[in-house]
Image (cartoon, rainbow, N blue to C red; front, top):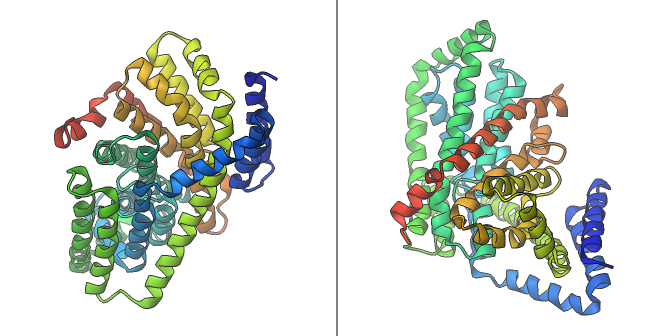
Length: 443
């Protein structure tokens, strides 16, 4: 049986497995082992074990649980509440100010943890009740929570960027530096959309009531500024940790350890470091990293068989055969990522597609750093795209009664379009990505 037929059957089996509702890691592992043994024989099993061992012993990936732990400490210590209080004060005079504050909170909290689940849930718990109590539309409120939370996968210390560096050999520091301006760009597009919507398209009587409620809090502005000052150590911690990576002072693993320790030190300084909080943060970190690890084992089984059956050449030739125009080839690759993002988590997408895409990037002569950020921004949309956008499920869990899944999808859709607009700008203007890394870390 030819490689093309086996690869087609393998993709079909994967889709059937996903639609069956089985756990993604189990589906990937089962399909990978079954087709690997059928196509290669039983001697492919040691290949699976070697690939898993390589990931387990990758020094760079130690940074993942440490950054996740840092984020949970910041979230559970009350520093996140201080941060939201500060952003709320800064945006209180804007129409749609609380929604803007939610986006700002998501962007800043993204610098604390590279895990979207933590960002979305934290933003939902802190920001959503404030918006709902002031009669903000549920759709745009939930959409802002989801969009702001997805910035956690882009703005450093992004877990996705760490995995991307591990898989491709690119510098983590340069990837982190390259992600900052795109992250700010996306957050700015979200805010611009919110300001236009609340200025021209929302019910002005409700907007006036909201603003009056915010004006009534001016007497408490000193409390807000105290909250903002309380969050300053958090800013210092974040920029110190990520800055040491970008400027080559420390490795990502060293910086993540310092960041986790620094988060505990700041919490202790504010007398918020308790044994129960520390224990809960550690358990959540273990659960999160354990889920990622289980998924990676299944992914490596699938990709070992998928690539072993000739996917690199078969799929690569198909993409290159579509057109001789580089932009068409690029858009085809991004479209593949976008469609896969509707069905899969970003981890299997990276491990499945990068071995196929990287040779094409090299053949086309594209800057690998530029392409890396296009991949990350494209996959960021996967969190908001149905049917399996994970941020949609997180939002469903925290949505107020009476809000349906369709309402959530409808509310997130404009923000997903904003993400695609940001992606288009990054394609058209590569210097948005390349300016900062070339400035602080020239090759």
